[in-house]
Length: 517
Ligand SMILES: CCCCCCCCCCCCC/C=C/[C@@H](O)[C@H](CO)NC(=O)CCCCCCCCCCCCCCC
Ligand SMILES: Nc1ncnc2c1ncn2[C@@H]1O[C@H](COP(=O)(O)OP(=O)(O)OP(=O)(O)O)[C@@H](O)[C@H]1O
Ligand SMILES: [Ca+2]
Image (cartoon, rainbow, N blue to C red; front, top):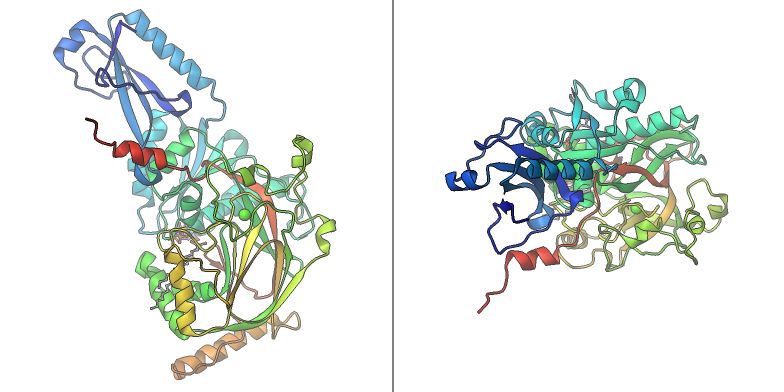
């Protein structure tokens, strides 16, 4: 290496794994790169080493943030410089997991309405630097991306689909891709017993929404540059998907939260206040907390008795998670065949052993992943796993406002939100909810009439303590049209351009090195 000088200070060594190199580009002797970028170089250096190339690579910063950094190598011989560039390019080409052509959907109205600007300023230049070509669609209405993926998109052309937006936009992509995959494979989504076919295309999320909880749980932060870099290096994170049915009819898919009672009411109220932006959830949350409605019904569930983890574990789902690598299964040997026997919702042997809980509930939540977000850094179910084939069913029984507030507050501290007499949590593969007053198919009419009646009464008598008979299900931020639902978890149905949250203790130490004498 004596013919080279790097612009990394002499004496410090720095190694970057090829898998985290984003691109390599040649520099002109005058300091300009062949791709038009310009870089200032000291004159002495250019005289001694007139040839140079720059390597762009992933650098880790605080709180799971990734940044694109450059290091330039100067060289005295042109042929040697070319050889290095060529070799690095060959190494990068050999990385087959990296996407080359992506389909990008931008929601211009999500979150703070910054989607387009975020993509153009922060993400597109990185994709270009990594030689990724894109077809970009700015959505014109809700469900544009879902319907395009479902029916029109020429999926064979792409190595992945990227959405710029929030959890709602991600949900559109999931619905489009999963439905398309089932249709192409002749699978009927209406049957809860059918084993769904996993999607082959990976999904990237460039966060530009209000909650971005999928990004938090899969990357550790909602930062557009970090997410773009995870796409470029071709990361892959499998994820469970819940299917939600009503009377053997498919309603929706869910990947994060299915919430009835508190979170359903917060969402229903907040939808009318979209103009407030992300603050609508805090406003409606406060209002819903004060109304303190409870709902009566029965929850039946199939516990995941054969699973490796529990919702009260201290360990967390992190990059390379052992539990997710084994589909959450307890298995006795190392044979790959054995580890592939993950039960899906279609397995009949699991028909036995259902549990039932009846009562009055303030909230019924099913968290398929932690649902960590800035409002609750550890999430609704801190020990939930991204890809173990289960969801954590959290039942919060009717209790005083004071106790419910204590429970909510624990989502923001280290204290255990499940360690309360009125809260129970079960790790399940499947569950059903039947509201108390639901007896026949006219539930929806009853629900709508009942809701209107009660909301009228409560508007007229704001201080009254009556609770309406029905709440709504919050399904990843969308309201479901039915209260009675049946839910099944489909293990690892989709894959994201992510790797799970990386443990970071080493970085924190390096960033604040101890003083040397
Ligand atoms: C006292 C403070 C307690 C704070 C407790 C906060 C717990 C927050 C847990 C958030 C869980 C988010 C789950 C993610 C669901 C997403 O699929 C979905 C789509 O993006 N987002 C929402 O539905 C958006 C749901 C947003 C829900 C926000 C709830 C805010 C509650 C505020 C309660 C205030 C009580 C104050 C009493 C003085
Ligand atoms: N062009 C559009 N016009 C109106 N709505 C759209 C458009 N494109 C997408 N949508 C819808 O906007 C909804 C909200 O978008 P998105 O998820 O990006 O932001 P958000 O709701 O602010 O964030 P979060 O879901 O994280 O809370 C989605 O459900 C999506 O279906
Ligand atoms: Ca899960």
